[in-house]
Structure formats: C-alpha cells, structure tokens
Image (cartoon, rainbow, N blue to C red; front, side, top):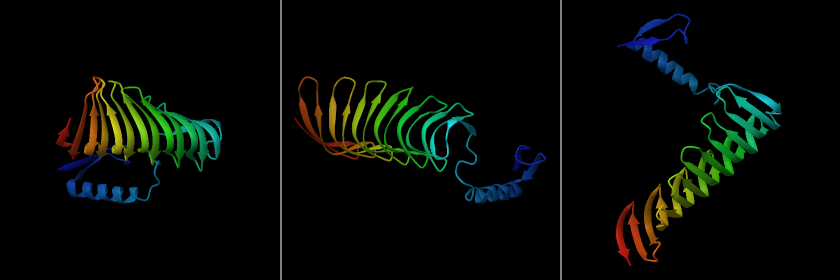
Length: 195
C-alpha cells in the first residue's frame, strides 16, 4: 500500500510506502497533542470593538459571526453567534463555549432554550422540533436525562424519567381525550402499564 501525501503539506509531492506513511501520520498525530486548540480553525477578523477583552464583533472567513463579550480572546459572557450553516445561538459563553443559559435555533428542524455546560445541553431546557414534538425537562451531555415531558404532535404527553434519551423508570401517558396510563419503562422497554 502506498500513501500519497499532497504538496500542500510538503514541499514536493511524494508517494510514500505504507511504513513511511504510517510514521509520518504518527508523528503528526503526536505533535497535534501539543498544538493549541483552534490553531487550524477558520481564520477571521475583529470588525468592531475589542475581541480580546471587552465587547466586539468577529467575523470568520466561512461567514460565521459573533457579537458579544470576550475574555482572553475567547467568547465569554453574553453574546450572539450565527454560524456558517445559519445556526443561531444567543446566550452566555465561558472560555469560548456555550455555558449557562441560552437559546439555539437550527433553521432546519429545532429550537432549544435552556441551560448549557461546555457546549452541551445540560440542566433544564426545552427542545421544540419542526414536526411539532417538544421535550421539556432535564438534560445531560446533549441527551434527555432525568425528569422530563415529551409532547407528541397529536397531543399525547409522556411525563417521566429518562436515561440517555430513552424512557427509564416510572411515568405517565396522558391522551387528549383525558385518558391516563401509569407506565414503567426499563431502558426504553415498557414493562408495566396501568389504566
């Protein structure tokens, strides 16, 4: 097997044996551990204010835009970010990550409003999907985790416990006609139902 390493990375285009290619790959991977995060990120420019320690507007080459507070060159405090794929986040930041309370609107299918920790939905929050489904409750690492209520487009509601996005533990299903079922799930599997 031959590895073709492009001239973009080396001065001359050269075909390496698999052993040479693997050595180069491992060396590059080893050095990448010591390179600060964001070095290979798309570059941009501060177009207004102070994007180091203060309030400023920063625009990336890919079209992303952040307007808000900065600390040590990172988004930190209240701010609004529109990414290149038109995802909008308005809320608090800490060390360049969504952290605290904020809302995110993905123009394709969802809106989340609630708490964040290290760029992940964590704490309490509400996700509304384009198809009309809604989840209100506790989140952990971008997953439904803890107590929550899921509302289906037809009006059926499930309130209960969740574990990594699946029903787990006791819960209650309520139907638009007033019917109520007490249920219990174990890792997504219905094990008991009472009417």
